[in-house]
Amino acid sequence: MNNYVCSEYHGPQYRSGETVNGVLHEDLMNLSFDDASIDIVLSSDVLEHVPRPYDAHRQIWRVLKPGGRHIFTVPFHLTEFLDETRAVHDENGELRLMKEPKYHGDPLRPEGALVYTIFSLQMLVEMSKIGFRTNMYHLYKPWYGILGSNAIVFEAIKV
Image (cartoon, rainbow, N blue to C red; front, side):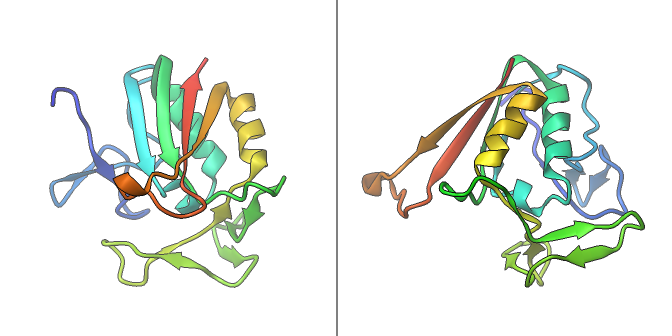
C-alpha cells in the first residue's frame, strides 16, 4: 500500500519520527508529520493511554488534510457528561493517580498500559472545539464478530 505509515509509542526516551527496532516511534501529543499531510489516521483503543488526549487530538487535527478523517475507538461512557480522569501528570511530570490504576494489555509492556481517561459526551464537545465534526457509530454485528454493548467507532472529520 503506497504512503501507508504505521507507528508505535515506544516511550518518552524517544523522539517522534525515530525508528525503534524497525518501527516508527510517534508520540500522539507531538507528531513528527507535516501540517495537512495525512488523509486518514486510524487508532484503536489508544487515546485512553495518552496523558493529555486532547493535545493528541489537536496534533491529529494539525496533520490531517482538510476533510481528512480520524477513525478511532476509545472506552466511552454513553450516559456520562464528563470524562473520567483516572491519572494525570503534574507540573513536574510526576504521575498522580486520581483513581485506582487500571491497565490494558500491551504487547510492548508486560505491565500493560495505564488508562488515563475514560471518555464521555464531553469528548464530542472538545472535538468540536478543536475543529472536528465527529460521528459516532454504535456497532453490534454478531455475524462479523462485533459483540458487546459498547462497540462504538468514532469518525472525526477535519472541518
